[in-house]
Length: 462
Figure 1 (cartoon, rainbow, N blue to C red):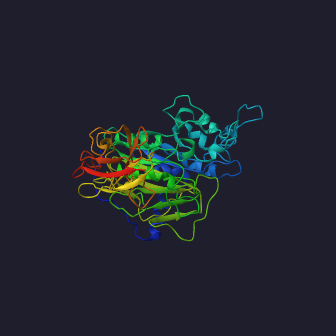
Figure 2 (figure 1 turned 90 degrees about the horizontal axis):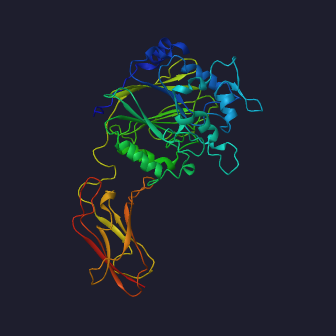
C-alpha cells in the first residue's frame, strides 16, 4: 500500500567512495544482478538499436542476468522502425529481400533476446516506417511486439493506441506502471480531454493505493536541445494529482535525473515526480545545452547505459549502469513513495468564485450566435457543471433556453487558471432581447466546495 513518508536520501561520502562502490560491487556486466532483491526490477532505456552502431549490443549485454521486466522508451529500431530494422538491428535475424528470416548465430547480444520480458513504448522513429498512406501507423513496431505493444487491442498491428498499464510486485506491495504514447498527433492528441488523457485519469483512479511509475518517449523537461515537450504536460498533471513517483523518458540521447518537481517544473520534495531521461540505449549520444534546467541533478553522456529500478513495496532504488558495468555515482539512490497531494494542485482555500464572463455583465450588441462562458477561480468538479447548474433565460421569464453545457479544465501549459464552463444555445439568440445567465450554487470545486451563492448576469443580443 502507498504510504506517506519523508523522502529517504542516501548520501555517499565523497566521489571516491561512490566510485569504489559502483566499480567494486558491479565490476563487470555479468554481475549487474548481484544487488537484485526479491522485489521486482524494471530495467531499460530508449533510443536503442541501429545497424550502424554496436552500442545497442553493448547495452543488451547489461540485460543478461537481470531477473526483471525490460522497458523500452521509444525509438527502438532505427532509422524508421521497419520490420527489417527490428529483425536486423533490434533482433538477431537477417531479412533477405524475399522477407524470410535467417538466424544470425554470431550476434549474441541484442535487445530482442528479451522480447518476452519487454513492455515497450513507441517513439517517433517508429512512425517513419514507409507506408502506402501518409502514415504507416508504426506497423513495424506494432507488428514486431504484437499484443505487448497495445494489449488492450488484441491482434492490432497498425495504428494501434500504444498506451496501456500493468502491475509489478505482490498484491500487498505492487507498483502500477503506465505506458503512454507521446506521438500525440498519431493517437488523437495528448491534451486535456483527449481519449488518452481521459484513459490515464481513469486508470490512475482505479489504482489509488499503488506506487506509480510511468514512461513514454518525449520528455517534459530536458537540459539538452531535445525535449521540454509541453504537449505531454497533461500527462504530468494527471500523474502528479494521482501521486505518481517516477517518469521515464527517452528521445534526448543522454542520461539526466531531475529532483522531484511539479507539472510546472517547480521543486516539490514532498509530492513531486522524479523524471529520468534514459536515451542511452545505443543509437548515439547527444550533448547538453550550456545551461541546465532547474532541478536537474545528474547529467551524463559519456557512455551508453541502462537504468535499473528496484521497486520495493513503499519505495524504490535506482542505478544507472554504463556499458562497462559501473554504476554512475549519484548522491541519491533511493526514495519512498509519497502518495497524492492533499488536494488538486489548482485548488484554492475556501469556495470557488466566478472571475469573469463572456459576454460580460450588461454587454450589448452581442452576436446572436454567441456562446456564453463563465470562468472559475480554480478547478471545478466537472460532474457538477451541467444544464442544471448553468442556465440561460430571457429576462423576466422562467423558461430555460435550450442549450448544451461543456466544462473545460484548467490548461496546465499556461500560467493562468482557465477553468471554464461554456453554454451553447441550441438555437440562435434573438436580436434586441436581454438574457439572464445563471450559474447556481450547485457548481462545486474539485474538493466539493460550492459557489457561495447563485451567480447571475445580463446581456443583450444585437
